[in-house]
Image (cartoon, rainbow, N blue to C red; front, side):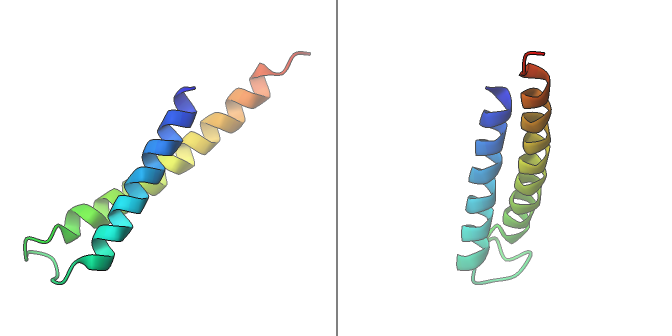
Length: 65
């Protein structure tokens, strides 16, 4: 269940980051959170990739022989 939660948290971070970047009117240093949104987008993608790898690995080891 842990990889699923990590995947969903990463997805939420990606959506939040993308929405914040889409509606931000200024650039970095304007107080609109552009840097934080970009970081959320990148870290969310990394979290989703790692969670996907964990899901694949857990499914492979959980199958009975």
